[in-house]
Image 1: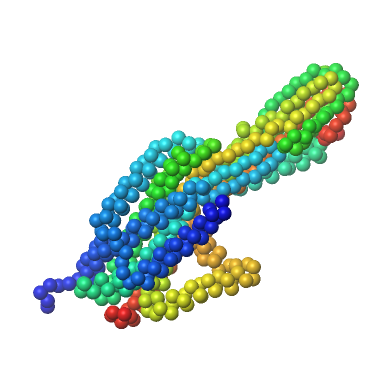
Image 2 (image 1 turned 90 degrees about the vertical axis):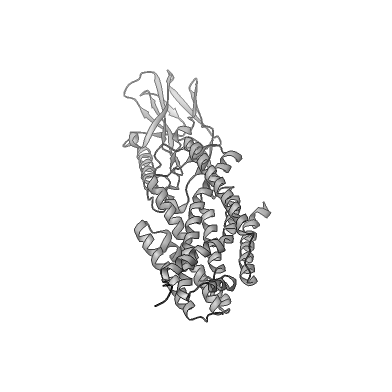
Length: 235
Length: 247
């Protein structure tokens, strides 16, 4: 590892030494024109073959989905933050615009009170909001809402796992989802190819990430009492 | 009236053809440096990562950036090399003058830059396909190019390389004019960068880089490179005309 970190300096040193050496030698470095032609021709053929293989194999992994620009991602992140702020203030304004429902649960419930236990996992504690229904229908409805997540401009929202909800008597346990690990290699043209592609799929400006917010929204029968670390909507 | 009427352009053409053959050895260094650049690019030319509540991510870029930068350095050194005495004296095998010799050198540098620019694109594919087969890629995202993007990118690569070749050529000519420039130019260059950075807010290098790198109009970028390269090469031409025939 240490050797690898010194390697670039070493190589630059070799290149500079090579250049200075040639400048001072007053003689041309030559392997013979015929040999150089063979080397250059062979190298060009290898490059052309590699390009043909690359152009026929790699497009199978082409990113077909639209890559979000930095501006779009900022807009999405701001909209999510605003919607969450609205939730904490007790209203559901613009919720559907910024979040999608990833999973729904429904539990029959005829107890007087509900204890909510939030299990702290490797991904922290889930935010839970609750809203009273207008009637006592003996059913608890839970919805897991998730905002869009972009890594390097690519949408990875589908990769996220939903949490686990378990109802045992009057105790509702919310187990946080397992941490999702995403690793990928991005084969991109260099800066010379992206310099004039402002806003295009591989433009430098797209290279940022937004991790979507998530929460659980409970709809509970009108007259039950809830104990636990939750925030109420419309109360 | 002469038995053989000689036109300047004919001599330039002949010298250019001769130089293409004679300076052929510079392309071996191109191959070596390009292979080195591929080696350096192999672990990815950039990476990013982070962790949030629900997701942990890391990604690696495989781009032509390192290869292109290495080719710029190659062009800079190659341009210096062809101004050295051993190469310059070859010109006297022809009926020539300073201007003709310089123009044929510039044409050679342009051809070398075009070849280097094309091989940057091709060698990027070589290293990407090597990375594809020999590295553990969890998942791959490939950003492909449209024909226009490809063409613009190729021209941009060539222009960047030619810009460095022009700078190297002027540096080489100055050194040939007086060996003192071998010390003076790096001192001014690095001294300037250090002085610029002393305040903690370096602007010189950033501004020069941004002048070309942040240009979003392709036409303006071509104009910028053409103007700067022309200034550098015209200065070389002017200086070399003041040199003695065999110095």
